Image 1 (cartoon, rainbow, N blue to C red):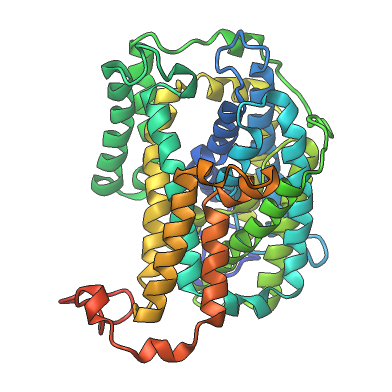
Image 2: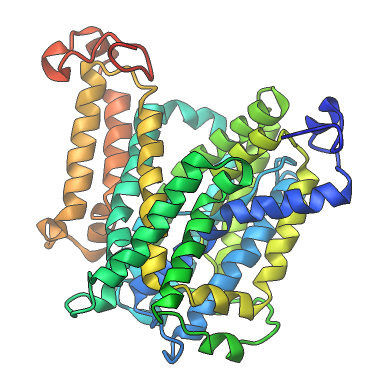
Length: 471
C-alpha cells in the first residue's frame, strides 16, 4: 500500500509526480508482472491457430518468437504513447497498454491453418483498424450512448465464450494433438490443473503482489511440473539471438475486406474498454472523474499504438484493466512509474532469448492459464451486465443477440452459402451479437421497459442494478 516513504498523499494522486527511483523501479516492474502473461498469450494463440509449429525444429518457430517479441516491444511503445504522449496522442496517465484478447475471435478465422502467409492479411487489418480506432477519439464521447452496459457486457461475455474452447484444447494438448493418444491424457490435465489450482489458491488466500500475479505464478508452478515430466525443452533458447530489432513489414501487408471490417468493428469495443479503464484509473488513483482530454488522448494512443504494431508484426493493443486495479491497490498514480515498466517491456522485446524462453512453456501449461483468464473475461462481462435493469425489453435484446451470436459461432456451417467475407464476420459470434444488440437497443421502443417481466424472468424483476434477489 502507499506510504510516506513513497510520497505524500497529494503527491501520490498526482500523475506527474515521480517517486524515488528505488521505489519507482520495482513499482514499474510490478506493473509488467501483472500483465505479462496476458500480453504474450494472444501471440501464441494466433500462431497456434495459423499452424505454426510449437517445436523448436519447426520452420515457423522463429516467426512465433518474433511475434512474441513484438507484442512485448509495442506494448511498451503504446504505453509510452499513453504516459508521455505526443501532441493530442496519450492521456498522460499511468495507463498500461498490452495485446488485446478482444480481437482473438476475429483473428483466428482469418489465419486458421494458413501458416505464415496469412499474417499479411492480419497485419493489414490491424493497421487499418488501428487508424480507424484513433479516429474514434474525435467523437468517442458522442457514441457512448449506443454502448450501454447491456451491449458492452454482452460483447465482453461473448469474447470470453468464444475463447474458452481454446483453453480446453490447449490444456488437453493443443490442436495438433487432437485425435492422438496423448490428447487429453492424465499427464496433460495434471499439468494444466496445477496451474488452475495454484492460481486459485494465490488469488484467494494470498495478499498483495502474490494475489495480483496469481496467474503468472500459477503458470510457473505448472511449468515446474511439466519440467519434472520431461515436457520442457530449452534447445531454442541457446540458438536465439541476444539482440534483434523490430523489422518493418516483417509479415508484409495485405488488405482484406473481412479483416478490415472485423478490426474496425472491434475497435468500438476496445475504445469503450479504454474509456472505462481511464475512468477507473482517475477514480481509483486520484479520486476524480476523467477529463474529455484524457479520454480522447487515451483513445488516440490506443489506435495509433495498434496501427504501429501492425506495421512491425505485432497484434492490436488496448489498455489493461488488471493494472487499473494495481493502481488502486498501491495508491500510486504516477505516470512515470508506468513509463519505467514500459521501458522494461521494450528491453524484453529486443531480446529474442526472452521470447525463446516464453516459447518453452508447454501448451498444456498455457492452457491452464488461459482457462482462468478467459473465464475471468466471461465473469467480467457478467459483472458489467449486473448494471442492467432486467426488464422485458432488455431481456429480449440480450436473448436474441446471445442466441444468434453464440449459435452461429457454434455452428458455422449454417452459413455455408454466404460469401467468405461475410461468413468469417458472422461466425465470429461477437460481431453479430454486438450489432444485433446495438441495433435493437436503438430501435426498440423504450416504453417496453415499463412492462412487467415476472413471467419471463422467474421473479428477478424489481431488483436494483447489480443486485440479486434477497440482497
